[in-house]
Amino acid sequence: MQNKGLLTTFTILFALGCVFSLSLTWFANKVEKDATEFAKEYATKYETANSGLKFTKLDSVEYAYLDSMSSEKVYPLIGYTYGELRTKMLNLGLDLKGGMNVTLEVQVEEVVKALSSYNKDVAFNQAIID
Image 1: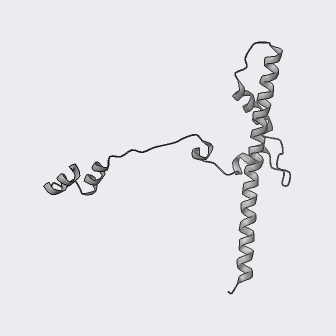
Image 2 (image 1 turned 90 degrees about the horizontal axis):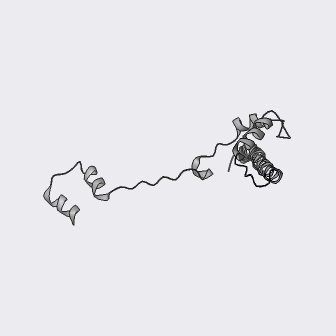
Image 3 (image 1 turned 90 degrees about the vertical axis):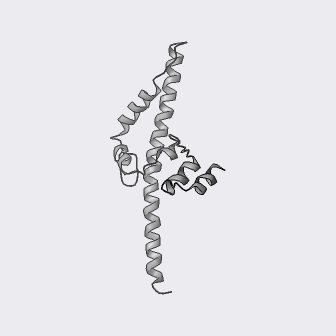
């Protein structure tokens, strides 16, 4: 096997690139998790201080925390801010975040008819009915 060193070099570089991309996502997700925890703690303090009133604006507190962190350096090696990490991190689709599920239902008879260009043959139509 020729160029074994070249192949090893490219494999190592590719692996380092993958680890770097995943680390950006990991640090951004860590900040978002901290924001969620901060919002929950804030709600608990609010409910304790105002005995009986329920705090319902968790999303706005979380958003304010993330907005305040957008200029803070959160990636220790390079010094990326949270705002920069949000633009460079891997984007997870709705299926990976648990946001959307789509189910497509089709009638098999209609698909077969459409694939046959709506064939008028009596034997064909009888076979579909049976």
